[in-house]
Length: 164
Image (cartoon, rainbow, N blue to C red; front, side, top):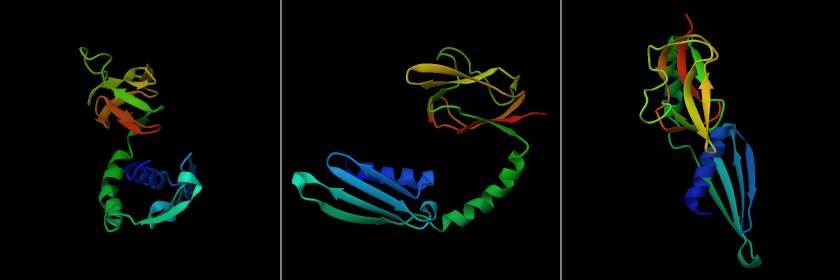
């Protein structure tokens, strides 16, 4: 495991909100502890165990932009009020989102499209299976939040729908 993989693991744990994660592999033992859900400081203990002799390193990572955090909610507050009247269609699974049924066909829905309950809005490929994502509501697509052929996570917002 190289330093980039460890840094990516630290970022993932900080974003997840977990306070402590322990990872033990054949030659490495990592403990990641965060305070205030990763907001203040992340401390990582890396212990390499080559040839039976443990060696311990301690790395401390502070957030890169602490001043930007208070400004973000202020800027997003008006946008959140505007979007509160819309319903969000979220991803039910992890995978790769495709807005078209195949590369030569048109997209399922676009901004301004009217959808009904049960209409397919996209497909998500997970483990070589293409899962059709159906709308659970009727309304008009106001915003597409994800690009075609991009990875999506569970519960990630995909579309904003105006139910009126």
